[in-house]
Every structure is written in C-alpha cells, then in structure tokens.
Image 1: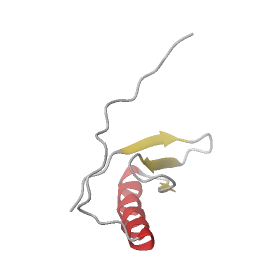
Image 2: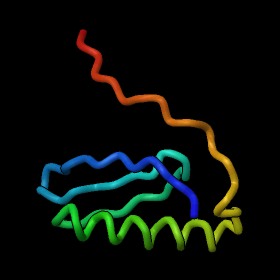
Image 3: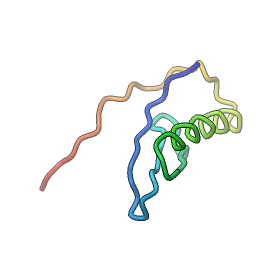
Length: 70
C-alpha cells in the first residue's frame, strides 16, 4: 500500500484535525489520536476510490514543516 504524510493539528475546540499532504482536500477530525489515525486511513481509502487514483502511484516527497518567526 502507499505511504502518505499526515499533518495533525489541534483545533480551538480541542478536536484533532488531520490533513493528508499528498491528497488535496483529504482531511478528517476526531477527539483522540488513535481515533484520528483510524479515520485518516478511511479518508485516504475513500479519496482514492472517489478519484480513481492508483494507490501505488508515486507522489512528490514531503520535505518538512517549519515555523517562521517575524
């Protein structure tokens, strides 16, 4: 199966929000990290099914997330 980069953030309401870097618009949320990871796998599978994308298709490599101070 493919490997995807997931960014996890905590919303102001306390929910965890996951977005999949390689799949624009693919995201989900949950109260716990365990539940979130389960849901993100479901979201990826649904995204790939809906778009007809090949799960083995290569995606650009994720490099990093940086904080920038002004």
